[in-house]
Length: 217
Image (cartoon, rainbow, N blue to C red; front, side):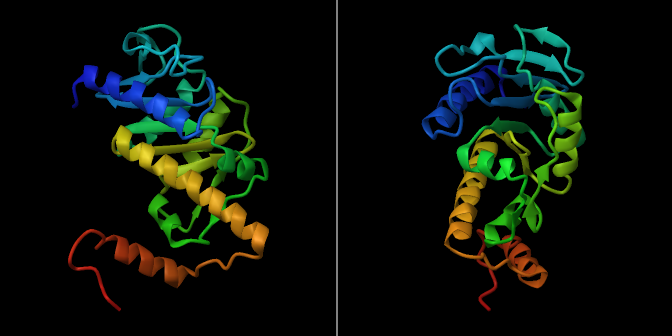
């Protein structure tokens, strides 16, 4: 497990980076990171201007505060993802513009681009609408993330999880980019959706990505 002090510093930098990328505005969105059987999470109302390493909150997976102040109102969403998906080490929730727009249409993002496969399947699902900060929302997100590492939240935003804070940030950026590109494609015409066979080939190639064994045909 990483040093907790280093994780706190990384989370502050990540909050600022999300704002710089306009993926979060003011105090929207929240971040968490697994600390063994505990969770480090941003406090309610957090943004880069008021956040310090000591203001981050430590909770257990039941939401009990172990140190710090009041955790994000979405703490249960974070603990639900971390509890149900052991491979998740970090969770990011944002109100990124393009993801919000599609979530307000309550649309999943289909396989209009092969990089959708990077989130685990042939689409990025849109979780059913539930009130923010509710147990029902947490359950909806867990369902939408089955076999996936990212989803939209109806009339709300998006959630991704990753094997590290950096990995989660990369996934967050990729999801917002794909959402924007899908919107642009729909505005231009009717996107052609890749077939199951074509996506199966993409997943096969992802298995070789970054190695010299990548198939050439």
